[in-house]
Image 1 (tube, rainbow, N blue to C red):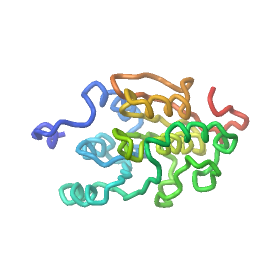
Image 2 (image 1 turned 90 degrees about the vertical axis):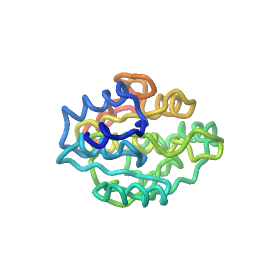
Image 3 (image 1 turned 120 degrees about the horizontal axis):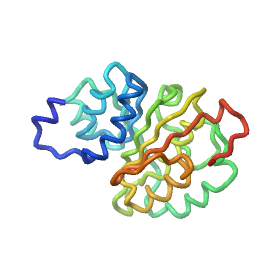
Image 4 (image 1 turned 30 degrees about the vertical axis):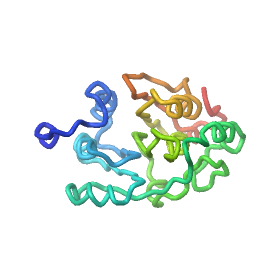
Length: 214
């Protein structure tokens, strides 16, 4: 916290937006926290989950090198995305297929939206919190968060038991708005504060026959 109190850098989320996930971390920490995106707020997330495991997935390898030189204690992995924001409408239609409603390990999914290139341990951990604040999605040539949002929801449903709190930032944008409602489900929406949306998704493995969305 001292790092942020003495820094002139503006964090990616507002104080009110951060407070949404902070309340959950205060209840669940130490826990397993997966963050899509490595940023100037990453040390804060790690500190708020003191004693837990916080892992960051980042698309820009040079950015990882830059941040980890300053903050070598952060656990981060480089990941690649093969989508573009311009494909969002097409991928939304893909997501309506039955293959995309099957609750399985993302590595075994037949859905084109499932991300399969993460380190194996990312798939093997039951995540208590997942924050989707990446990849880049603010211009047409960017990867967009279509697959990240879908995969976060799939991981949450595929956990052994219990529930996962999933947060999506930048829901003022079309992709984040539509994909979070479709694949994290409006029925699982707990709250929205500013540009962040909070969903609580129960394990679908713990209760067979549960519909993809309530």
